[in-house]
Amino acid sequence: MVDAAPAPRTGGGSFKDKDKPVEVRLSNIIAAKAVSDAVRTSLGPKGMDKMIKTSNGEVIITNDGATILKHMAVLHPAAKMLVDLSAAQDVEAGDGTTSVVVLAGSLLGAAQKMLNKGIHPTTIAESFQKASHKANEFLTEVATKLDLSDRDSLLKSASTSLNSKIVSQYSGLFAPIAVDAVLRVIDPATAVNVDLKDIRIVKKVGGTIDDTELVDGLVLAQNVLKSAGGPTRIEKAKIGLVQFQLSPPKPDMENQIIVNDYRQMDKILKEERQYLLNMVKKIKKSGCNVLLIQKSILRDAVNDLSLHFLAKLKIMVVKDIERDEIEFICKSTGCKPIADIDSFTEDKLGYADLIDEVQDAGSRVVKITGVKHAGKTVSILCHGANSLVLEEAERSLHDALCVIRCLVKKKYLVAGGGAPEIEISLRLQEYAKTLRGMEAHCFQAFAEALEVIPITLAENAGLNPIAIVTELRNRHALGETTAGINVRKGAITNILDENVIQPLLVSTSAIELAAETVKMLLKIDDLVQTR
Image (cartoon, rainbow, N blue to C red; front, side):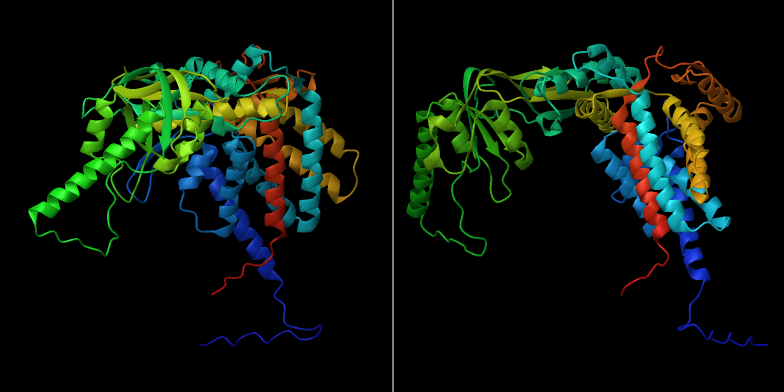
């Protein structure tokens, strides 16, 4: 038996399916919540780690929300929006990348309940937007002003960020490194932002994380070329950074030179020798005694003959400098990149007291210290037993640096441990009582959705979320604005006594970005695929 197709609806214009927008919205919400639930277990100091296997077989172990989502093969367009949301939080604040996705998932869950009650999606989206602005107002009220000379508070903020990472046991080492690195590249009195490109993290496998250090100067991961017997330590160094090759020129790819006479061969070798000798003499004439050579894909940066000449003239050579390192090296040493041998002059050299190749925790690095016209840059030499630990240590350090950058941008601190979320939730619920109509319902739902952060912190720490969050609400209702979940003691304590604090910017940007993404998802009522 074959069912007859339903007759097209007539009257009131063209055919219109009322159920499609509802289905599209529901599909979007389910897909986005699936992404949110995937990273939810990674939130907080007791959060779980994820092991990711990339398409090229590389293995990554992390609990950083942005890293997990970046490597996740997400197909649904709505779920991709949550991946972009995490990336946006990473750019804006650098920390809170897991919280923002968990928050967005919770807000979508609240929105779904209200859609089922028949509230229009535009009303929900706009009310959530207003509620996020109000929440940030309340957050600013409970925040504490910070002075950048208060080193103790900066250290506590960096430690709080590091405590939720795999390398949390090293927070006592990483926090001072992050604070000192940022304070060295800015003027604390006038700075309103930090360019993290001025802080370079150099990774070297070997030793343990304990060997990580902050170097006031420049560290190069490349080794000094010693094959021709050149120097490995130079005092009163004059540094030249060249972007050309110290090897004989080659013909174009499609050209060939056929030599059928040994005299011609001899002549070519003589010419080659003379060509390289002239280049090396010009370098020596400028007074340069340390040569950094940019990596080349076309031909060898140096050959044995040129290395022999440079070693004879006591010039140290480091090759394979990456293109993206050039700007940092120039800023750190005061030298200028030299594109061809004719423009190799003394005014383009950088000056340093000492350049030395040192054996450090089982690996060799080149340290440049005592730079004369140094820009405001620092290097962090990061060690680890293997590449997995090293990558995660770098990500954790980056988050700690971002936390300090947030405090430079917006000099306010809030408590951690779910305390600000519960406080705002209670205040928003009180504020919702002053509103009327659908807006009051939406504000109430937004306020309840914020409780997902303390609930998740309690769940991940193996505590009873209902009992913990109920007690937390009660303590905040009694006026304890800094009461939060102490996951180590498994109880509610004054979180400031435990030194758990975070920048205001991390929380405000998370709420704002989550509300913005939810608004966009709710406004979508159709999904069209182009060819």
